[in-house]
Length: 111
Length: 116
Image 1 (tube, chains in turn orange, purple):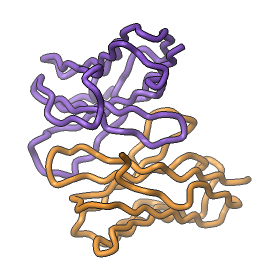
Image 2: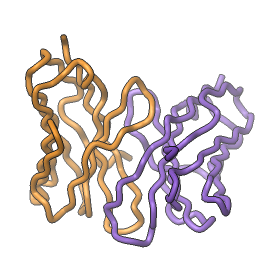
Image 3: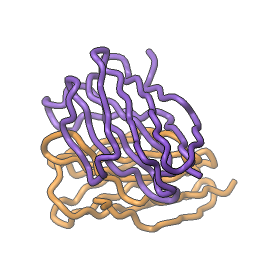
Image 4: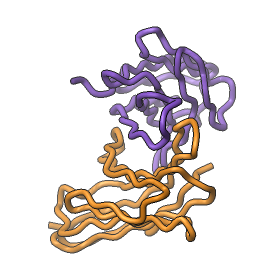
């Protein structure tokens, strides 16, 4: 079964707008990672946030983590058409480095 | 520095057949995980190999088996294929299964398996 659940399932915005997607999970985690997937191909790692961190930035990406609510959010600022993709959160447990993915958010950025 | 590579890119099989998928990890990585991604779904963890042994396993039947070679490359074998095995199979690698958790894993481009 999937560990995480992304919300919304689909998101359509205009180029230049910000996109926010959320991830909720069920069990205790060591870390949470966000990935991008274009057209059903391999996943590209975007950012990792550890359970003792609350916020991380990478370029136009901002990730927050609230372990008390078991949720995370990914903000993409100043979106571009090239950001069109599916975005997944993946949670890592304390041992083993196996990851549990959510169902993903499909983002469409309209030029 | 080559990333994670997988072969073949696409594969078509019929029900009941057996299939072998291959993965070469990123340089410097010694741990390989396999995931199954059905259409419209997120990847689901199949199993993970380290030091040529299966270390973790997800909720998949034993029709799914694997192997890791001394050079860290890996194979995924699926026997008695079912229509429901049609999916994108992704391989991911990382370094050091037993080290600090929270290591970034890198994914290959996947193998698209179609079972007719």
